[in-house]
Structures are given as C-alpha cells and as structure tokens.
Image (tube, rainbow, N blue to C red; front, side, top):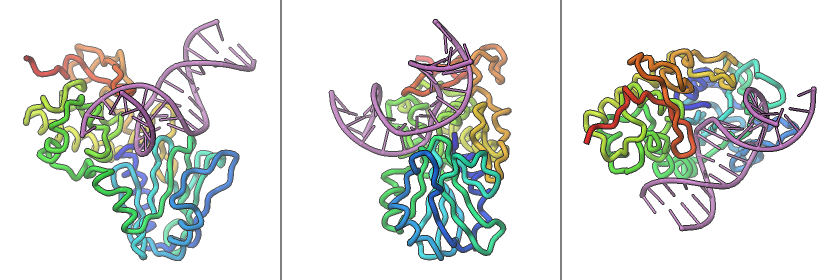
Length: 281
DNA sequence: CCCCAGTCCTGCGGGC
DNA sequence: TGCCCGCAGGACTGGG
C-alpha cells in the first residue's frame, strides 16, 4: 500500500521524465471499469498533450508532474496503484498511459489492480482547491517537531489514528504509523493531548528516521506483493519492519514481549506493550 | 469541530 | 474441489 516512502520511490523512478514532452495521454481499455480521471479524459488530454514536463514532485501520497502550462498532472495510487516506465506486472490491470518524447523512456504507465487510484490534471486554481491546505497538511518530511505538536497536540484522538489524518500531516499511512510509534516508544492508544514535549520530539525524530530509512530501501512490498518501483522491482523495507504484521513475534527492541495487534478506527495497529507504555498517572 | 461506519475495489486464504 | 465470506486499507461521504 503506497505511503510516503513508496510514492517517493515511484517519483524517483520517473524523475528523468523532467524535460520530456507529453505526446499522448490515454485510458487503456480493459474488462474493468476505467479508473477515475479528473476532470475527464478528453479535457485531461487537452490540458497536458504537447506540454513539456518541467519537474516531477511528490506531495504526501501523490506524484505530481509539473507541466510547462503550469497545470499539474497528479497520480494518486491509493491501495494498489503503480507508476511504471517498463515491465507492468500484468497487461490486465494497465489503466492509463502517457506517451513521451525526448527522454530516457518512451512512456509512463499507470497500473492498478483494484482500481481505487486516480489520475487528475489541475489548473493552478483547481490544484489549490483540491490539494490545498484545507485538504492536505504539510508533507510528513517537511514538518518540524513543533509544527507536528501544534497540528495534532489539541486532539483527543489516539495518536495512531491522528497520524493517519492527511489533513493534519500528509504521507503517513497505516504501516508507517505503527513503525514510527514503535521507534518513538509511544503507545498507539495515547491521546494526542497527553503527549509531552519530549514525546513530540521523539515522534518527530522517529518519523524522520523511519521514513528516510524506508526510502533508502525503496519502500515495503508486503506478502501480497503488490507494491513495485517504476521498473517493477520489489522494495526491501519489509525485511526491516519492527512491528507491522508481526503479531506474536518477539519485539525486536526489548526481546521480552511479543508484538500485539489491536484495531483502531477499523484498521490494524501493531505495537509492543512493553516498549510502548502510556505515561503513568 | 470530532468521530465512526459504510463505500469503492480485487485477490487471497480460511472454513466448510 | 469449489464456493462463500472476511479481510487488507487510502480516501471520501454521510450521519450523529
């Protein structure tokens, strides 16, 4: 499930498209319902075809192609979307394609098994409306300890649930929320408003360490095998997970307790009850 | 504002 | 062996 490290890996995989020209954009027909395209495929095509790609950026869990006409082409992979330059895992779930001219690769393909993702092309005004500060908080890697505390600190929600709120912080999903809290030694159930300054600092440091380490390993490919980089190669960070999907296994930090799975806001949370204790009192 | 449940969607694995 | 069901969870919606 692509979160910040996986989406950043996708971005790096197509970063060399900067400087290329988009020659064509098309939905690839298939047996399934087409993926969501905004505003629609005809208007998207008119907005991006014959435009040069000036930069390939990322915001939260989205990859953004910045075009010469100041429009932005946005890929949102959600659960199973992949952004590829070659070797799609199957022909059946290829959904969308950009043909390019003048770069290292002739096309960018969007593949999505479950089809929950989307492709959008926004004018600057539309971009501000759809992906502005009302919808998305600052990117998780562009956020200081103080800003993290000021954005989440008043909430009574459990810290694990709050970290998933993209309006507060963009880029952290279910997997990395558990991993970050384990490194920070903070209980996932602890209400945000009870975290101390010291804990916010630890959370910030753990967020930087875990996300950057995961980027280094090119993200996590879980046992379902879905996530791949732009060349359809699996990531490696799943071999370094401390708690995620490891219920019943010994905690790699204390070696004295087992990892426990609980459910918060209908999602699995994994943590070590010995290392991640709520503060006393 | 906060919080929760339902929805989308497909593939996989458990149970019978 | 096959079928049904539940589960995975990112983002959105509607209701309390």
